[in-house]
Length: 290
Image (cartoon, rainbow, N blue to C red; front, side, top):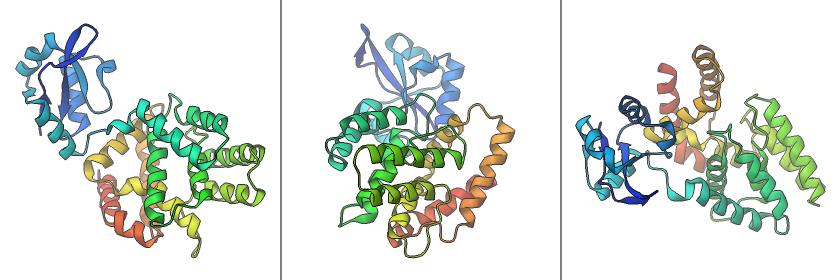
């Protein structure tokens, strides 16, 4: 593993900046930054922005100098690279376009939902997660489009997020019923969205529940990430519960992991099992051992 730094070549605030990254883990990167005295505000999802005047100093402290191209290649290979469209300014554009196609004429409702998903206390349960669930639902439904009720349920499934399991799903379902009814969505579709949102509390759809299987598998697709991506997911989940002590978080998280491992099957669609099941079980078992 290594902490890497590229040449100062990124202009901002009247100077040039380097990027400081790890090719192994964010924990390694944050520890190096802490020892070097870099401020937390310099961190931007997968790298620290470092002014030119500190480049030589950081190399002396152990950062390995590489070209800009090498840094990007190593970061991508590590699985830690945050894609441009996943950054907030690009994320909102992508989600806004998706909402307009999903429920035309209801831009104000889309704005309200985006504001909820962008609340500052969210780290994992944010717009990046929403987009990942929407994309996973698309992948599970191909070559057909994902059902509209599934996509609406994805938008609402964590629209209320206070970190209280069960209560969040119920409050999100209630919000979906109120807002979709006010938007003129057919009553049967509203009730289906409500049912699907509530289902994300257990991730246990009944056999033959096609829409439930798609949404639950899409919501849990994060479990099938490669190790570096899974580590980033765990770090974001821990940040969501920063107010909880390490001991209490470890106890609660272990219960969640055991529940997920006990689900049989963990993924309910054939495509979901093919895409994510093997890697997900390995990730969960490794997390429980840790």
